[in-house]
Length: 255
Figure 1 (cartoon, rainbow, N blue to C red):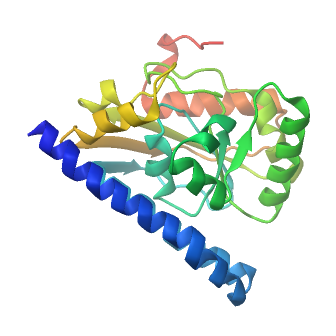
Figure 2: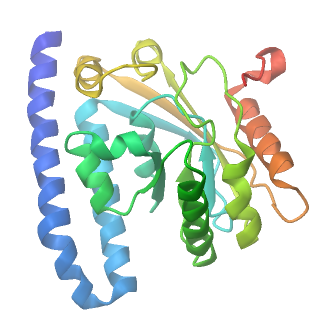
């Protein structure tokens, strides 16, 4: 049964990916004729519908707690898996901030590049500065961004340190930060983490074999950036995520 489940879900994922590629290659260019605002709105709808389709195919049930603040356009979340993007991206129109490695992933990397994902090249100060300027501009335009400030994924057993420099665009734009906490329950809690040197396709196949995945998605209270420096902002955001996950500070902060 698990192999059969993997097989038919793999076929459905392939079909969904082909549909996504057709949308970004054929449909998105045509939308430009409607004007940028209208085109962006329709692109967002297509993107959210695609993510929701993937959740359905993968058997992912999202349990959502709390509500996001519409006046907090920088979403910051703990990072466990590539699946995080699908789960969170199905909730609202978002622009993603991702590590450069994702741009090279088969199919998903292509879709990320064509849908406006911003890529961070770690260790490159000039690139980080350019990214920060772009993020600041988008935040001032009231575009909602999703950032994983740990800078890498983890097993979900702890929340890693949030890198303060990634919060600088929120300070420059004068916007609030929306903490987002994510956890996977049941079998998915052990299989979902995408860490270390794990390869994407084998991990995807393992996820396809899980009968049902429960993703708990919690939105904490938004944090005003006006009276906090970036270090304080990063610390406050992490503390909120830790609190939403119910981990408390019995879990040590990992550098």
